Amino acid sequence: MGDRFCLTLLEAAEMNGFTAAEMQVLVDRHADVALNANGAWRIDPNALKAVVDGSAGYLQAA
Image 1: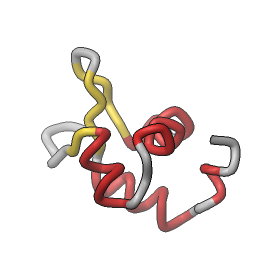
Image 2: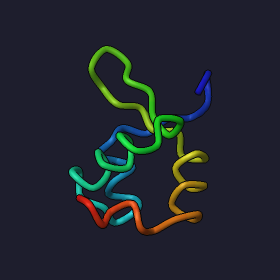
Image 3: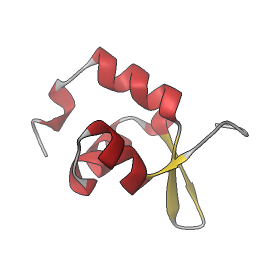
Image 4: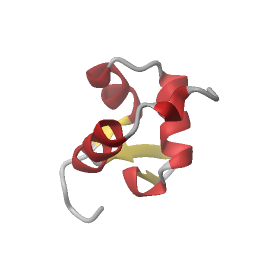
């Protein structure tokens, strides 16, 4: 993830119309989307967009 712009889990969820629980499912299933820094999830908006644009079926098990 490096020094790229990052969002909190709640910011990313709100911006994409997800609940916090749905966003957590996404993070759990797509490790390259987020980084846990001192207990707080930091979301890479570019990686998130790639996952969301590529597949909508990840929420079915949530």
